[in-house]
Image (cartoon, rainbow, N blue to C red; front, side, top):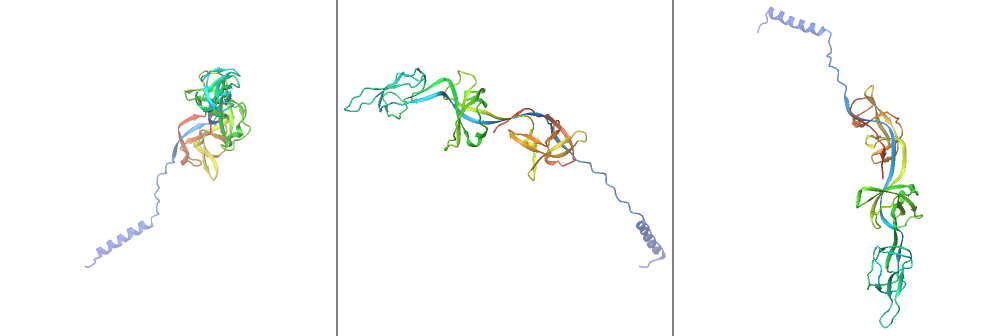
Length: 309
């Protein structure tokens, strides 16, 4: 194929055009600016409130000054002239035991009430063979009831006479009965590693009977007028607890290290790091970092709090 002058000029022209474009200044492409991410969060305004610590316990209602009665002699229980719930006076006959055996005869041995009160237990019936260790009856003052319960050794540091409690009964679950500690055992039981504690009801109530099973909420330490926040909003990094504080003007958050005190029922007392009326992030804080923008979708104020162990 022969190249003519015309072809030559066309080739030179193409190279010239390419050369001119290559020499033109290069312009960088500008992308539109990226939009700043705004995170959705829930907030809570800080206020001061009371935080009540308490213990959950179980106990049994018993008659005060309950005494078990035993016979002086072994033999056959021949007579029980009292019934369950009977009122007896001190020295009143409550049973008779015949100590006779085949070939011998003895006068019946009487069993007397050592105190006045009510018969709260009659475990044996006439005709039963008894020994001097057989409980014939239990007598107590059912007009003066008390609650007995055991408290673990690990919790006894907070115990003191006068601590208040709310008591609930299986028969009246929706109602609480106020009580308080009036006696604490001076020793720890070596087997159960617990202390025996006694409560009395603040008011008499005919619905409460000896032998009832009860649940007790014992109020222990009260932290008054303290800053409390939900434990769910507290994060930890390198053993340092922190929360995010919201700035309503800039709509940004900042990380704030805090120190906590008592923690009860999902609430924590903050002893250092936060001030009254500040706003903290309570939901959505896992993706946050210092200075990011946020949008509130809900807020609330703290209320008086009571919690237990």
